[in-house]
Length: 308
Image (cartoon, rainbow, N blue to C red; front, side):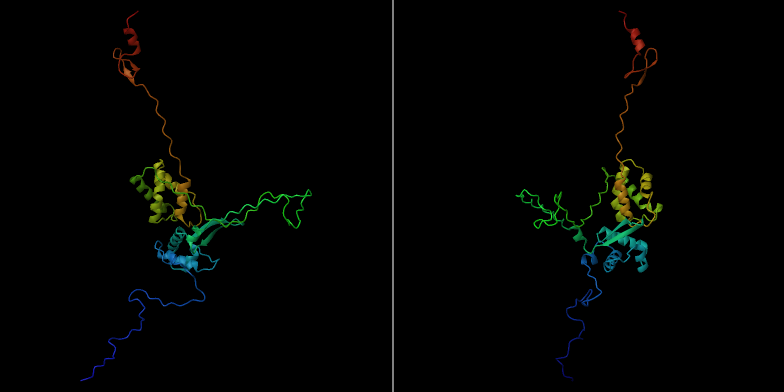
């Protein structure tokens, strides 16, 4: 009979350290000293954006200044198509991580200026520039001789300054977009018609593809147009006519701008109809005459009066 070995291990030893959690992801950290990018968890773990938008945001943050991040360039770099990449860029714009503006160059060409923000909250909460303090009034001159503008007491200062120089203030945050119009009296049937108009715009122009969230956000503005007596075909024609020839980067923003700036005024109140006295048939001679109530015509009334 073999002797019992009390110092033998009760189970096989694992090579995983005890600090590693029993389930979930385990990280092997390594300190980077070159070719790395600092990404905030507010972007990498954003709860409102899709995975495509998160990947695009992290990729754009890792690029140096001057790299082209247009839709066609990103589609050539990744397997996702232009539609998915355009949707991801619109999500980054909606959450403040990206801004794209159209500008005209001195040569007359239109270019897109793209700015990526690694901390949108810092841009929104940027404190206003401090106002310059008014300079103290100069002391009165006691001598009768005119002061020399280039004297040591006042070197290179203008003789009669008109206004203090305005220091260059940092660029402030852009003004918020005007709110979308809303109907005065919400109506479920009108709201459904507005949603159908927005969802069907891509039949007239394939570039006007809207997500369900954009349709829900813009349906109230279209309902305001319908409430003011605009026919659905006229609303659709206003939103799809005279569109730009190049790629539309944000269809929802373009439609929101048109629905807000081109909103027609309410119809004026209809003028009151003039009161028309109805026609009556005379009970005696059967002639037609105008009177508020049935009876005799003026001729028969005059003939029936006693002479006197």
